[in-house]
Amino acid sequence: MNTEIFKITDQNRKTAEAQKAIEKAGRILQNGGLAAFPTETVYGLGGDALNPESSRKIYAAKGRPSDNPLIVHICRWEDLSPSVKKIPETAKRLAEVFWPGPLTMILEKSDKVPKETTGGLSTVAVRMPDDETALSLIRAAGGYVAAPSANLSGRPSPTLAKYVQEDLGGRIEMILDGGQACIGLESTIVDLTEEVPVILRPGYITREMLSKVLGEVEVDRAILPEGSDAAPKAPGMKYRHYAPKAELTIIAGEEEAVVNRINELVREAEKRGLRSGVIATERTAARYSADSVKNAGNRDKEETAAKELYRILREFDGEEVDLIYSEAFTENGIGQAVMNRLLKAAGHRMEEVSSDGE
Image 1 (cartoon, rainbow, N blue to C red):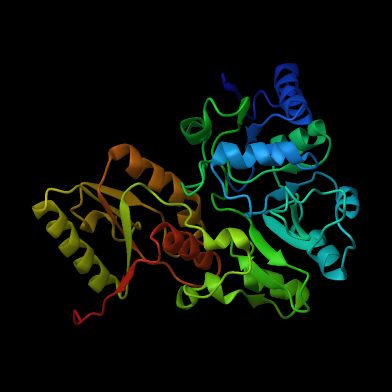
Image 2: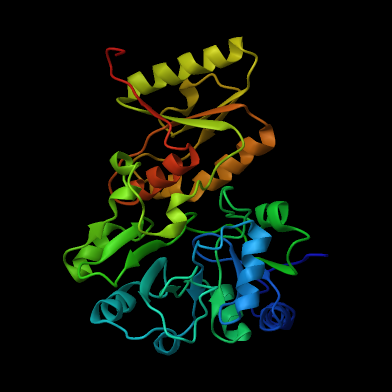
């Protein structure tokens, strides 16, 4: 299969050529094919959410387990009602504040949505992305687009179209290239079928932000570092995700102790003839002696780390490093989402160090 790529920029977005490309991608989806497209979070692999065969094709293209539900993307609030049994007041309040945006809500599904799309569950995950190209494509495709991240299952999610091509070129019909995703991490997932809303996957929309709208909000223990042995409520969270080819280890502790320990590990790797990479921040990047040091941005603005994380992991793959060491990030705000993805990518390999070296 030849995968067609069309680049959409701010300069050409309104042109007839760009609109024709989006309409073509929409027809591909309506006819049961697959097309990748940009969103504000990461690139999505789109198929017709109401077509069971399209969902099966998505699972096959990604190599994704079929019990891992697909998120249904809509472009209008009025399209939510036909896809769910009821819309609770909590959903209305969240949508007023966060849609379009990086928030996915889990609700009881209607018969309109096939179980192939929901991984066999009686619930459906729905969101409205905050990206003009994505919304136009959803409209052109008929209003309901199932779209997980556009990568091979287990690999880092793509924030650039070139990584979609790297993983899925020849497996799908089309890629709409909209440049770099502005957030860089997948959407927050909140389950609204429980009495108290539960965050099943952390993201840009934080617990604090949700609590301001809803009041009490819980977090699934399985997504927290101390809950790594707990069974996650979201089926997809039980699988290894976001993983680079090299072994990744997170080093946590006070800054000085972390820098010293990572440099010690880098020296050990060099003695073994192994190439090492380090995920650092602006304050520490110059202090490392690894073969490749990546600056994830300002530690005081961890949204920069969120935006750069998957790109960094992909770059390490291209540089063929053998071992990766990453500084840990805070568990507050979007830092919780960054740590969630890092821990998943590392297979929960994390070492804590103290200033006295113990």
